[in-house]
Image 1 (cartoon, rainbow, N blue to C red):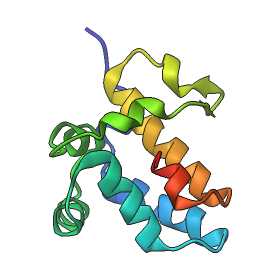
Image 2 (cartoon, rainbow, N blue to C red; image 1 turned 90 degrees about the vertical axis):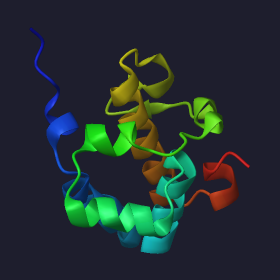
Image 3 (cartoon, one colour; image 1 turned 180 degrees about the vertical axis):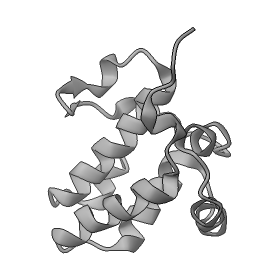
Image 4 (tube, rainbow, N blue to C red; image 1 turned 90 degrees about the horizontal axis):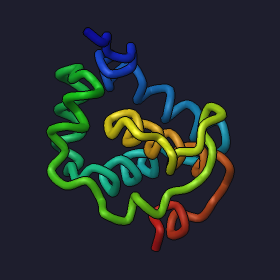
Length: 117
């Protein structure tokens, strides 16, 4: 029996404020964080807020996403020392895609580039 990675069972609502804080520390806005998450997952703003309020765990948050953006496969680079494009476990890869997009936001990248426009 394999045990799930701790982040899978962690509430998305616990991680979300960290994303917002990371962005705001670099003069970016919560709205941009939300836009990135909506782009990646297909959630509406109302659905996103409902999951935060419900404290949905990360695995469920991603599993119930209306439509994961096909352009997310264009996300490349390193998060926590690991290349996101080489992560084999699908849920972990989706989490790292989100981390990478938030990193790009915090590094001042233009939204059009972050959203692979």
